[in-house]
Amino acid sequence: MGRMVRKQLYIDDEHEAALKARAAERGVTEAEIMREALDRYLGDIAREEADAAWERILEFSRRRAAKGPLPGKRDWTRDEIYDRPGKPGRGW
Image 1 (cartoon, rainbow, N blue to C red):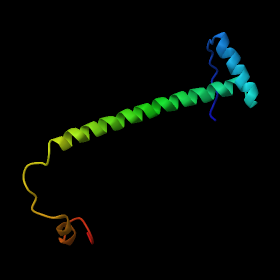
Image 2: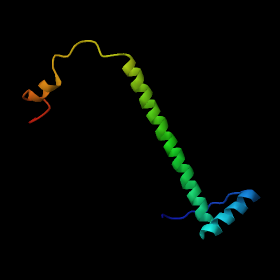
Image 3: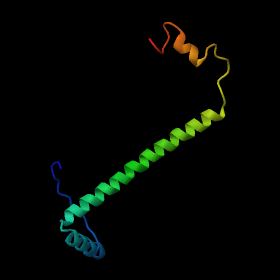
Image 4: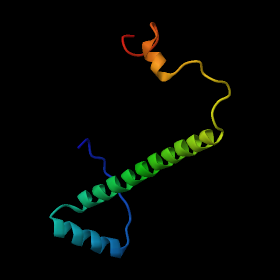
């Protein structure tokens, strides 16, 4: 764990009682419980952001796929790529 920085916050009586009970039950400090809660909360935000990014990627992919193939025909097959000298593939 890195350098600790002191922070203060106000909580209501119910949070106070629950925090004290949970810390005593687990045999850790109240500060440790608060740090764990903060870690969980920040981790949830990171997951939500990652999920949103994947949704944007999927939506882009769906829109692109709906447009169909690009116009024009290719003049090669995948197998030919591997057989052509100087082209990417085996032995390139």
